[in-house]
Amino acid sequence: MLLVDSHSHFDDASFASDREAVLARARTAGVMAQILPATHADAWQNLQNVCQEHPGLYPAYGLHPVYLPVHLPEHLDNLRQRLDSGAPCVAVGEIGLDYFLDTLDRQRQQDFFEAQLKLALTFNLPVIIHARRAFDAVIATLRRFPGSRGVIHSFSGSQEQAKQLCKMGFMLGIGGPITYERAQRLRRTVKQIPLENLLLETDAPDQPDSQWRGQRNEPARLIKVLDTLAELRGESPEHIAAATTANAERLFGIHIHAA
Image (cartoon, rainbow, N blue to C red; front, side, top):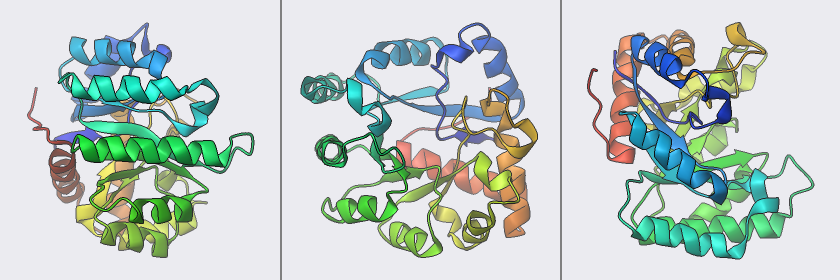
């Protein structure tokens, strides 16, 4: 099986000391590609370097809502310049809205979110969206930007919200949270999402699965997500692997092959 981790922060400092070993474990597990979304402007260059050094890593650049305090208006100009430079980039992300942290100004989040949606449309790129307790606001915003496409990272919304997003053509990223038995609503919802709208992700080094709780997550753990999703849906891991990999290839314009 060839797998794509559609959301990995493999450029994170927690991987600095053993990145090659982590990458080798991922490939042994069948994870032949990772999409690395950025969080803030100061991290872009390191992310680019990590992707250039390791085949199968694909960069995305954006301004994450949780990092709102460090974002400056000129970072949007810098993002446009980076996208316009022709340097490899498969998406604009990680962008979006976070209503979980009440210290983040919602209007300022909205302004950065909309500016980056415009850039994605300008450069014909998909978006990688962070939506935490903000699904209705994200959906309402996307309706104002017809033609937008991409993935809602770590989807945790309702079945109705999933249906609306799928109808708009968006993918839904599924990761470690589905492995926890207490996540009953999410586990019910993933059974109903069309397979052509699903992507697998780890969010490494965050969101470890239930068997890896409290440890640094890594892309090799994508197998646990795959197996859980297959069990919940009553489908074979091979079938889901083939479909989600094809979805990632189509969305991000990449082609996956064995090492």
